[in-house]
Amino acid sequence: MFAFGRGGRSCSFQEWRDWSESLRRQVPGPSPQRQTGGAKSEQERRDDVYSKIEDHTSSGGSIRQRRFAIGDGKSVAGGSANQPGSESTKIISITTLLLKHLISALRELLQAPIRLTRQFPFEQVNWTTSSFLIGTLAITLTVVPWYLWHFGLDTFQAALFFFMLLATGFSITLGYHRLYAHLTFQALQPVHFFTLIFGAAAFENSALMWASEHRRHHKHVDHDEGPYSISKGFFYAHIGWLLFKLNGDLSYDNVSDLLKNRLVRWQHRYIHLIAVIVSFVLPAAAGFIWNGWSGALGSFLLAGMARLVILQHCTFLINSACHVFGTQPYSAKCSARDSWFIALFTMGEGYHNYHHEFQHDYRNGVQPWNFDPTKWIIWSLSKVGLTRQLRRVSKEKIQLALQLNSSQSPATTTEWNYSFQSRPTPWLENACHSMTWVILRAYLPY
Image 1 (cartoon, rainbow, N blue to C red):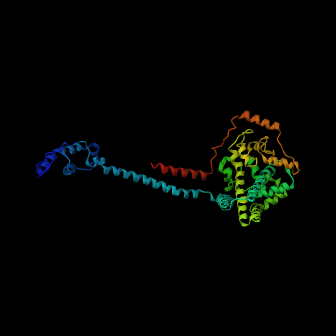
Image 2 (cartoon, rainbow, N blue to C red):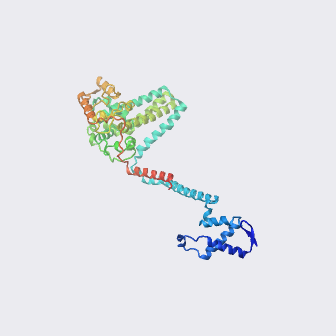
Image 3 (tube, rainbow, N blue to C red):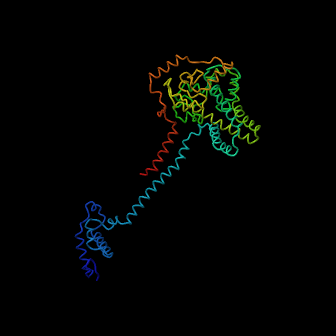
């Protein structure tokens, strides 16, 4: 005998079984969709109802509550979805799924450098030039500040730094660029010798190679045939063209006039020896004479390394920034632009739009107010007989170019211009796509 329900009336087990059988008949049968499954027989479903009622009554629940739950067609297992244990199971399942996707994304992120390494064109890297450019930059950013912190800066080192910077800088702008590449004036032997000696100390290769590449740049400006075309991207035009060997072997058929110059051939033959002696050995020796070993180290770092990095990147800005920033008052036929700001620290080379339109003029900043110290030096040397036959474009031709350009394309004087139509090299494009895909997988697991 036992009691169940609200009243607690005693009954035998047979009475209780008969009552539960009548209760089972009141429970609606399974839906046709579930019947089609055909998993359980009639006896098995009956035993399930008995066991569930027994569990419910033994736990203290009422028959009416159990009947309500069964009448709604919800089993005990289905109804338990609202219980706290079921909620925690859901949270655990979702967390497990998120962790699984996160681990997959991390695996892809770790494998991405391996894929990029396999795609990277190591055979096209110019290892000598790349190591030198990256090494000098690293020393300038680390060792030079350390020296200044521990030893300070004296007047001699500062004067030697600016002398080397101006001597090598004007040797590039006046000698390599306007004298050899464009033949905008003629010079006597002392000017040739000075610009070739200190131009080598800029570590921008020989005047012969520099002029050959620059003449190809003017011939194929904004095209892939150019050695440092802006159509391949800002980074490529700035320094990427030096880090990678993408242009093949250099031909000197466009500088046959320079091959007749004996000093130019001599500098081209001994370019690296001259560069090391003038750029590093002489400043270090001068510093040693001034202040011993600490002075030698400081002169080597400041007048050698730091000066070299600053000068090179100022030169590189002409190839990159002057094809992106500035105005186009004289011509819109190419991407070259005038920038008075860049002219301030490139010895007047920032007026690049005028230069590409009138490349045989010894002046880059043609207007009186344009900052172009290189043209002032050339003009001054002509007054003492060291330079002669300075080539100029007439004022009428310059004025005509201004008028034609303003009438044909009045919107070409914008301060920003960059073409995104050009695509990078395939391996770089694939690398960008791979990294983008990894990032999206990390943040979008579904």
